[in-house]
Amino acid sequence: MVELRPSLDIVAPFFNESASASAFARLLGELEAAVAQRFGMTVHKILVDDGSRDDGAVRFSQALTGSWEIVRLSRNFGKEVAVLAGLDQSRGDMVLIMDADLQHSLDISLKLIAELVAHPDIDVVFAQNDRREASWRRSQLARLFYSLINSSQRFDIPENAGDFRVMRGAVARALTSLRDKRRFNKGLFAWAGFRQKALPYSPESRASGTSKWSRLNLIAFSLEGFTSFSVIPLRLISLSGLLAALAGALYGAKVFFEVIFYGIAVPGYPSLLVAIVLLGGLNLTLLGLIGEYVWVTLSESKDRPVYLVRDVVRSVAPVDRPEPGTSNR
Image 1 (cartoon, rainbow, N blue to C red):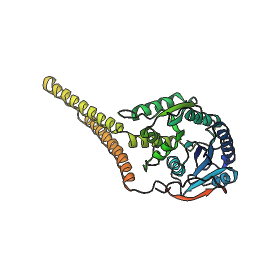
Image 2: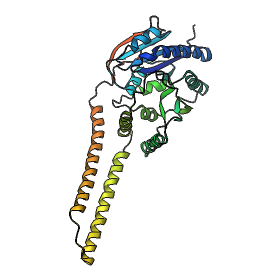
Image 3: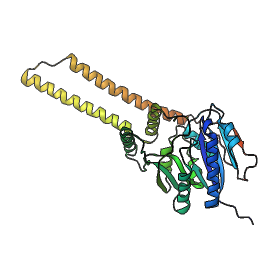
Image 4: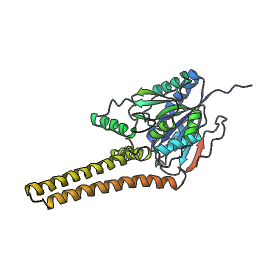
């Protein structure tokens, strides 16, 4: 009877990474050889083309070796969804999620796998960015974000932890059951629980191109996290309204006593204008924030598929593997 070797699936979403395709394919080849030598594991590579507008999928298909598949989505759904599409296709004993822009190095990938192999009691090992290159202002904003989003939660979202992680197959299968349409993977990974361990790392420089995350995208992504996993923004606005009402009551009492005891004339236009602007601003802010939560609720209630697959390209002689679940759930 032939004993099956444990398997590792590598999930790597990409978007317009044509320039780095050859280099990343070489890195995957080196990682596959190292994993086979050090851990005796077979490797299957799952790349997810998130609606790229270049020929990255073609270049990857020409450069990849061994057992691989490229899942091409029908359009750009975003990295968070592309990760889910890769997990849907995975069925290995372990699953490694990494980026295709070469910022996740061979050494740190092997360290993640080695940590999970060495500790059977651990379910997930995630890489935690030490943010050495980040400015002081950005570091403080990130710290404030995690402090707020983790308030009043039964779980904590680790600071500066992204998708770069390795997990056991059971964890990957559990994560595919979370079919949120508006996805915030940091929160979903933390919400799922399991026994997790952090491993600090410093990302490598991009091989080519620039980051797809602009400041506006980061702000929108942070708002996505708040509306998906925290009620703190609503409570802060409610508290602001309460403080404004209290300030108004105190000001009204001050005016009343000045008129009754000192005969001071009540100021008219300036105080009225300040009150209107303050209360109007608070109301509009609250309405906008409620609108964000309503939009998330509406998106989830439509029950559309999280993503659609255009096609799947596989290696000529893939390793015999069980069939994955339906990918268009």
